[in-house]
Length: 59
Image: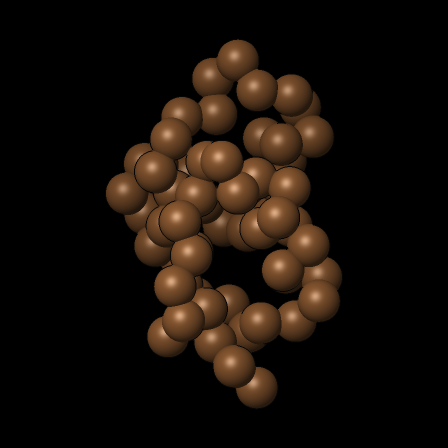
């Protein structure tokens, strides 16, 4: 299974509750924090919903 690294690059202030909960579900709390996930369809869908707040690269 492919891995991806997701890095939070923007704040969640003034974002919808759904976007804040998606970031929390991805395990992202602070700006600059990086988490690694398997590239499953559910994870990729969550990343797509907050793509303007995160950066993604293959691990």
